[in-house]
Image (cartoon, rainbow, N blue to C red; front, top):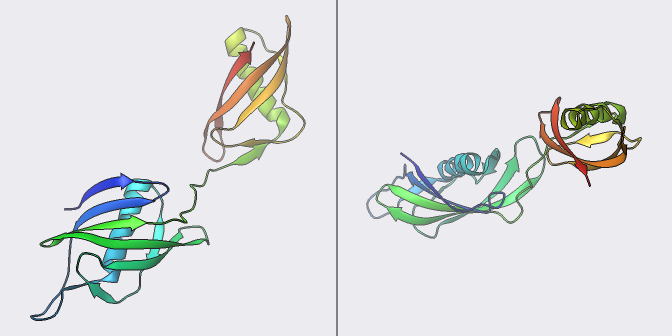
Length: 188
């Protein structure tokens, strides 16, 4: 059974985890644990708590199973070539259970999926959304350039309606790589 407690997480800034150890020891020798076991626990914690798929290389050696043991690892986010330093420290041991602290100053920013659509296609989507709001289909102009689509993208487009010219604020609220959803509102 693994109990996870997150202290804070910026990308995966600092995560603390409690786990069952698989350490080995012999009489007179300090207990050890495979660095790969600690790395695997850190990887699954980062995935579960932060949502990032990180592969950690903490080496293959046995490390001391004691409070204060620090592993300096190299993390690579799956699908990206960027490597980041990751520090994993054993911060508490209680019998076979142990707690680790995972920190990284250079964690990559979450990647947002984006794509481009022709301005004319985007303007049609905006015109349809505005028609539902104001009851008439206006002529929308968001500029001549293709529009970059990603969740949170915001644009101001002009619209010509039967009672005159207006501007509309458009925000992309969902994007799955091929389809997107928007919210549009007329500005006063």
